[in-house]
Length: 168
Image (tube, rainbow, N blue to C red; front, side, top):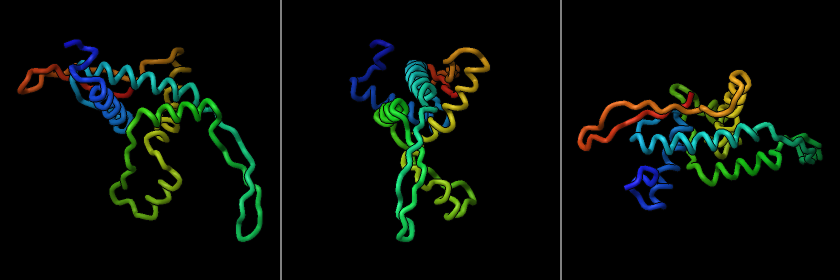
């Protein structure tokens, strides 16, 4: 059994990888085996780099919208070609998570906060992580190093070595 194959057929391996990368990007931290942690960290770095390189590619377009029977021109910000391609690649790989209401958040505030957001995980990658890590790359002077793998204890039962993967 090779470490890079994770002891699974390719369909199962990719499903586990997609699930764990999505979980890591949504929650910021994940505990798994060392082999899976390394695979998850590698794939997460690649997806974040793709988002960081394209998150500023926006195009402003004028659209004519009917408001109360009158035609009004409105400026809309759309994704540019590179950002749209990156968004589609992320959507093809990642599983989506549903946005949850915060404790003590009213339904009206929740609806206002999530209005127009169809894919919360993708929006989080482009609106939260990409600007954060792009700023960090300017300060440090190089890209990469968005995740860290910390080896922890052996799992009870099968003594598999566990690790925590987290976003820096």
